[in-house]
Amino acid sequence: MSSAPTVVVLNGPNLNLLGEREPEVYGHETLADVEALCRARTDELAWALDFRQTNHEGVMIDAIHEVRASAVGLVINAGGWTHTSVAIRDALAAVRGPVIEVHISDVHAREAFRRLSYISDVSAAVIVGRGVRGYVEAIDAVREHAGGRASHDDA
Image (cartoon, rainbow, N blue to C red; front, side):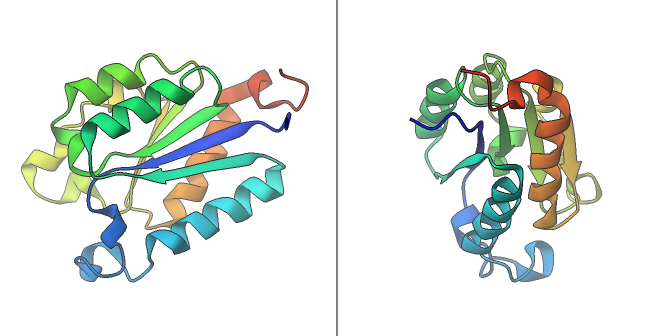
């Protein structure tokens, strides 16, 4: 059993299409590229990475419930659920470590409906418009906000 802190990165609907869907908005990097960036950063921190994507809201909620007490922190790109899901917001409110909301595009400069986030108020930080590098910034934000929970000595 590893004592390395685990950061969880959850990705919502349509993020499996990164690199194909609207590259002028989201870029040409794939979700596999995002995972590789995240893994490189967590390797530098000597952390474990749990990286997931789902197009099913209930599966996302179950994943949040599963890791709510064990993860050092949680990074979430909830995609369209950011603007629609009170249920995901409520699940995130139960996470013990810091929750960091991340979006590849600048959601505040896009359609008006994207300016509403149901998850920002339960997030320790919100990172938008930084491209896929925003995920690395989000992992660093977990580290900053986790404090003592990020220690190898935590059990």
